Length: 243
Image (cartoon, rainbow, N blue to C red; front, side, top):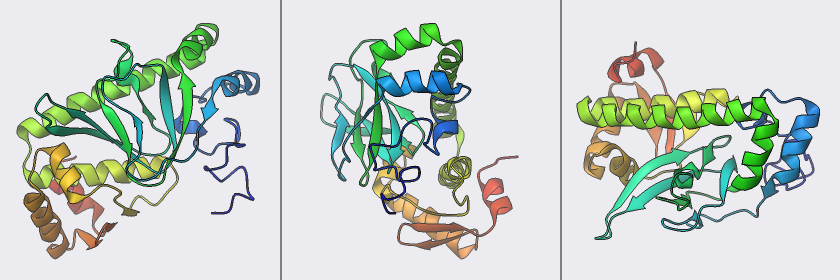
């Protein structure tokens, strides 16, 4: 995508909140033009992060939340013995970094899965502005609530569902998130590896690969390396036990 079109290029730091096509997914929702300008004044648009580059690390001081502008990120925590646990994947329009709000230290790390860019929103400035703009405050509370709901759903998924249900649920989640970004809900590229999917969903990489193979043989999905096409959405929902 060429940066000659500033309202569409998400690597272009000149794109403001009012122009960004991710606005409906991000913090500016429900704000009027003047309010968006106020928010835009506090947003910092950072340089692109390369694949494998960290946005923040576990135990670092918390000072900002981040809106993914392009690319994708993996959040993970590391135990005392060095074991890594993937805690989430973040796509454009989604907010990450809120794990540090309570303790003022990040309890997880965030790493780019591909070349990615973010909007950095200093939390102190955001708190101040939210007190002045009730619609912004409500939106931020909504995002926090969504994070809690997502964590609860993940715990339920890991506690009860089969490997097929877990993988199908992840594919449906990515499909839905793509749909909300006006992208194809049936054809997309997985930026995360099979091993990262397995880590996130409590499965071995071999199990993840077997599930993908089975779904492909059943003509539920088509798979070409990391490229996925959902061929039978109704069947995929059935596998995920989604009504």
